[in-house]
Image (tube, helix red, strand yellow):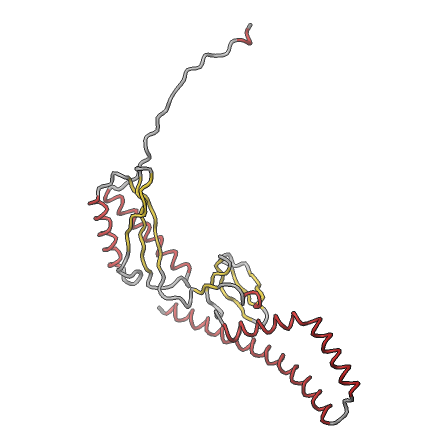
Length: 254
């Protein structure tokens, strides 16, 4: 518990630091724009700027818009993404393009992520603005599943006993699992095996990937233990083997 609080406080400190950095970058950008506008207005009020000067400035502004229009568009989209949409903070674990990423740093134009192997990935915020983003940290308690197959001849009583033992295991570990779960028969394949699925709910989301993996591993090992206790197995259908005797080729001896 103390470790979790420490990690959350550390992530919050990083988030505040990066937010301040982004605000400072935005402040500098707005300051430059205001200075330019102020100079132009001052020139107009002091009647220093003549019609020719205004035409010249307008032509330069059109040229700059042509050259940097796409950059300005990206900057505007990035600002909207960081300060309005704000789909994540520093320390959040997200999924983008099917890849799990940890938010390490947020700036006005880019966001830096870490993959599970600590490889850094730089994403332009204007690109992120049009991508679907899953955020584990902001998600509620999340579900998990274990799929397996049992022999077609497994008695219904054993499947009932399996369900009861799984229920007891979940009730013994309320700090890890919610008691509600599902044990469903998905399909019967080739009148040989029954495909089943065990669906459970963690008492946490998947922000802490290592903890989630540890809990699931313990659940899988418990299911294996229950299989052994109940002697639930899956055996392949016996396959026929046909042998043929081939006469040796002696033609090369002639």
